[in-house]
View (cartoon, rainbow, N blue to C red):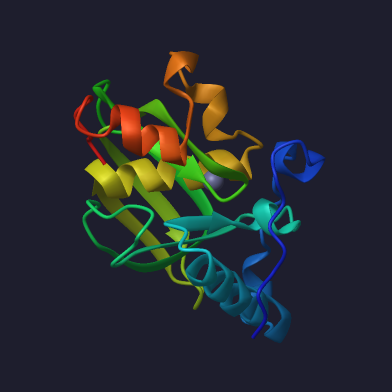
Length: 182
Ligand SMILES: [Zn+2]
């Protein structure tokens, strides 16, 4: 396994539309190895998720996992989920504001509105078609990662840019000041 280099904001790969994975390729050694490398990279950098664009590969693959994460100490746990060719459909018009960060925008946080419940349809790493309903923080992470696959970064969705903060200032001036929803 290998830890992959993460593209940072400004790199054009983050603005590319990721290409779908041909389902018959999912079982290939190359795709399986890439998925393992994405998981290792996400864990190395304490990400809640990682999209393939972020490691310079514009294909529709993302990994999500929230365990005990020092970057999101209050987040509910989400089991390791590998999503290929995801389609996200909002199940409500209701949105919720919550703090987000991104491995491609190091050491920053900003408040982003996200749908509170979405349907997620995708292929897993065995090629099985999965459909599930995700709510709250899981729904937020899914929307963040699938945005990446469409060339969208969370900073594009910040409504009030005055919330955009460096981590140290965020901890000092925002935590406890504004209720955290993630
Ligand atoms: Zn991100």
